[in-house]
Image 1 (cartoon, rainbow, N blue to C red):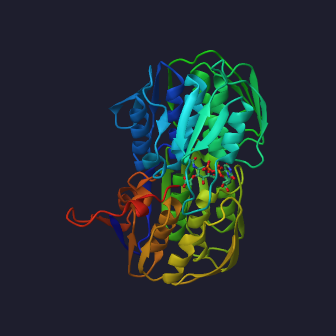
Image 2: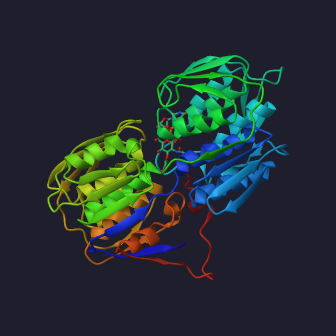
Image 3: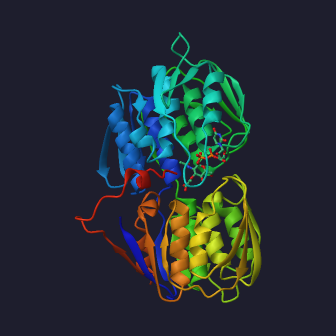
Length: 438
Ligand code: EPU
């Protein structure tokens, strides 16, 4: 397992370019299963989860070509197997996004039921209840979800109201409904930009999806979908992480190839905390730190409110702000594992259930720490950038799942960060450790 060695205290300055959004690329790749045609996706980030998703598609019988590093051409004229096995689902929960497309096009699917992970129990009951409302029979057999379309082989449009906002649940149901007979209405749907991005790909494939990006999505089913070409939106969480990197090091970063319109709640909160953020044009931001950061409370909630995927990075920033900040995590029940690592670096953080209080500013000191999930790893990198001395972050495979070459990007703007590769002769990590999917 690789580690990051960071020497803190460098002010970051320069330009970074943002990669495509992992959480948009994953469902868009799964949408390739909906058509016998070819979908061409540009701006796919080069991160581990994409490699896993590609492997899943290939295992099912699809062909994935990469004429360029960030372009994937996915063709699934036929599928040989209809199953996402435990081996894959346990390393990446987004494998469940194969369910909707397989069920819609082939009338059958078997996907291993994902267990809990480092950030919460994360059931998929709402996905399954939605498939049932579309007429599917859904059973649980030996740890697998086995779903079948009605005898006609086609799902039936329905009105489905989600009890709770679910991002991949909305995506799975939206994809399933594209090939159903009749119209489906999804109520209390997730509004994340990734949903809108998937809908625009589906519409290019010939689907009839309206209202994506709002809580009510209407999908008029069609008989078949065709080929399409689409460019994945920029990663709003990577963008926000770099804004915090500029802020925490009192630096100045020009952040290119991003989509400022997707960052409203984060930008608003960071400005309140004293970070200067300017929109230079529609795809470029300038973020500038200030010596006087102010503590500000935050509550994570579904889009367009403050994202849970930025909570850990915001906590790192608040260790440097003047005063007490209260951070409430309402989306996942166990997403504060980074706090105990930050405490080891000197952070004054108190956790009580889903609430954290950070008292700042504190002079963090470098320490050996462990990453527990993707965003927690990013927060420890940020803490390491401002800490005195050396921070060694273990289990950085978590960060490789969703941030493209973060150490290269950070080094290019002045950070002292090195990846230390584990010797090839060292024992491999146990499958238990690798199975920490998010
Ligand atoms: N939930 C249920 N039942 C369901 C589905 C969800 O109870 O059937 C609950 C979850 O347990 C959670 C809440 O609803 O408490 C929201 O979960 P959601 O389904 O929205 O999460 P997700 O779709 O599994 C996606 C992102 C996550 C991101 C969340 C929330 C992808 C591939 N993953 O997960 O991204 O945190 O939405 O915004 O899109 C990350 O990138 O680091 C990451 C974890």
